[in-house]
Length: 410
Image (cartoon, rainbow, N blue to C red; front, top):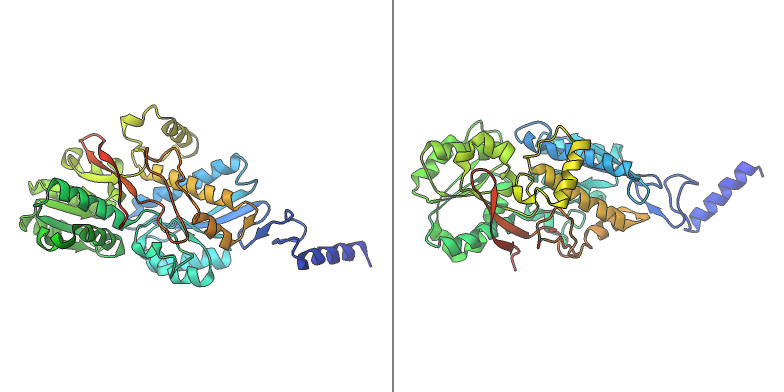
């Protein structure tokens, strides 16, 4: 037998004995286990984001994450492995998201999809990902469908829109129990998720307190007629769960009409740079929203160590990024949690173990989270973020209202 044949036979014997699992003979660490997208030297993770289309403002999330993994690689990677971040544009189009996901899983052979953006897009791929048993982790959406481990064990959400809706409702019941409420939301699971939680927390009072509602489609050029209709209802509270482009339009139109409701705005659109400034900062004064991470526009965090680190990162790796857009803080924070999950996975980089680690975060914290907010997951709890802090815009920045509130349904 030749020396080459002997080496091959020896390697095959080790594999058959279960002593080495690898994607390439002779390159695995002893005892390491890998699925597609992982090896001794690489972790390949997939992602899609609306870099174009009606909500392209959220494209900055994928751009920052690209920069973040570059930083991680320069620091030695994750457990010695470099991250290959493969991200595509789905234009906030579910059909396109399906196409890009198939490419990521079947052609790029990623380990999993991490923080893919959008409710409709992720709903469109959920059955496919679970059928393939490929992780769909920390979905950038809070739809209740992404927190259902019994039916979809390979899909894990992030923020629970229902929790955010419940926080607003509980605050409203304390401060304005006689409110006349107008609902304005995107006509899909993104908008409806907030509304379900909001109605649930209002309970029996929902029927009498909600006096009007209007929806919009992401293809609508304007939402002026909906805001006019809501004002005409006599409502004195506006529950506004709209994406950035439409939130800016709504804020402007409310001001033009001279309407002065108590205005609740989804955290997804509570961005000073991309929403409130275009709408007019004076027009946005008094708006109430929520947050769970430190606001890069808030002077309160100017000397905070975590914010200094984030600014240093922006200087070096994403200087073109808008520092007034707190989506860039969110993107950094969620990337830190992704890295933690992959670190916990160690040398067992199978898809099954990655999901187990994602569901094993116990009061985990990163410095950019607000004080008192922690991340907890379990095999039966697939929503990492359910603690929120109410905030109110003062015309320049956001002020805290009260303390951290648990928005879970318990």
